[in-house]
Length: 235
Image (tube, rainbow, N blue to C red; front, side, top):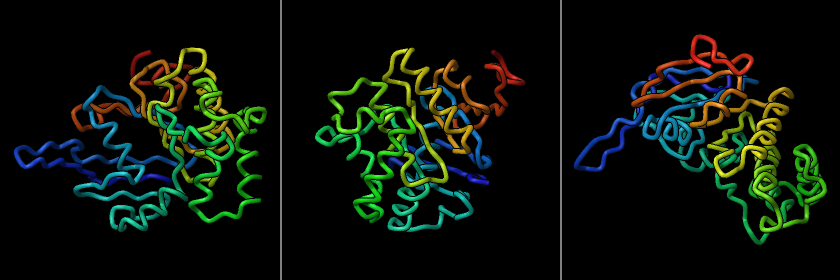
């Protein structure tokens, strides 16, 4: 089991008001699953993603990632977990504009202390894996939106993370590029990569294998996806 949440709660305390963003979530995600997290703005899905990515702490409950009780770790240990066990793909790509595609992909390995020769080799392989071997020396301003997202996916893969977290990965892309990115995710999942993706777009969620819907800080449905239909839900 890659992810296990036990009675996870997140409360934002502004002083004047307390906002309970997550209300006792219990959730398990197995290795090699491909899961969509859905819900309207304010439903709790982005809060969940931040906690899963060790970018935000929880108020109470337990979070186990790849067998590690993340909820009890200090900042230094959380940073190490983020770099070694989690690959991030964001809506805005988050590429450094002055670096080439290959240099952007190398960044997580630099933080992990991987030697230069090995970094370059793994970065090239990751870019080949997403179909960008011909653009490795191009900078982000020389790439299309879909190509930028491919670089971001390659960067997420290079440290062989336990899980890839994708936050609205097609939000800045046209429909054609979105389909290409979804095809890459499907290929990666078929190779055994565990993917959890936040999306508010139902047609994007239909590419995954399981759809979990949040509303007001609670899970209101959790169903398998087959043939672009949510089993037990609606098409």
